[in-house]
Length: 302
Ligand SMILES: Cc1cc2nc3c(=O)[nH]c(=O)nc-3n(C[C@H](O)[C@H](O)[C@H](O)COP(=O)(O)O)c2cc1C
Image 1: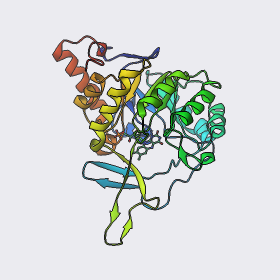
Image 2: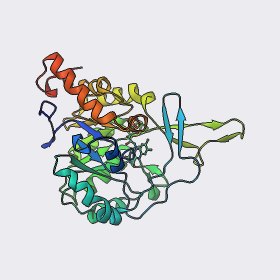
Image 3: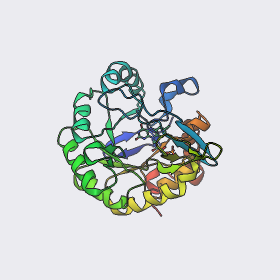
């Protein structure tokens, strides 16, 4: 494969900008395509201890996306180090970048999880700040710039790994939060996470989800996610990974023209497990047909 799609994300070179998004991808996708084609893989959100996740309904299909209430089910950082990292690292030989997504309910939990991560072979940390801060009574770190600032500052102080902060679209002012993350030393940003949503079972007169609200993703959110990526890219200098409803090469190009350096693909993997390699092929075809030599030429042109 040629390097026409190569991108530089804050001094980390990705062979192409297509990354499998956190929580929507596993190595099982290797049954459908050669995973070494990917620009990168982002792990499931990891916490200090294993989490069983939420009870009740977890995924609900809507007209143009899904609402999920998985509740960060994961095996915890220890088992991830021992079981998953060795396998993921094998992919690194073929140049696939490895991003580890970290979540937590207190600053100390984030810090402890990151200090336990076996950093060797990991290319960057994606800090999911859309988690309820139990110390602050369940307010999300990603909702206010002061909470986001404090968390990023502390995490920056304990790791030299490139740090990408994953922003929530549910914040009052996502641009302000993005700027605070940049000021506190983040190397990049990724956006967006899921939008707060709900569904109701009218026969039972009950919400579909035990927690009432859950997160909407997929094509339904694309125009809003795109707008947020565009707004944030106007205001920060650090590179951005754009995501939200990307299903094909044209969607990916919209995010790149809005200013994203890399793009992540989530829900579309559930619709068609071959979406990522298809997007890579479509991007390459677009550049060749248009006589564009690198994505740099069209990034942020809007
Ligand atoms: C089932 C599911 C699980 C997810 N788990 C995580 C997670 O653990 N950590 C995280 O940062 N984002 C998680 N996300 C959010 C996605 O990574 C992505 O930000 C979001 O779905 C928007 O992209 P999309 O519309 O392409 O799916 C999850 C999304 C889904 C649908």
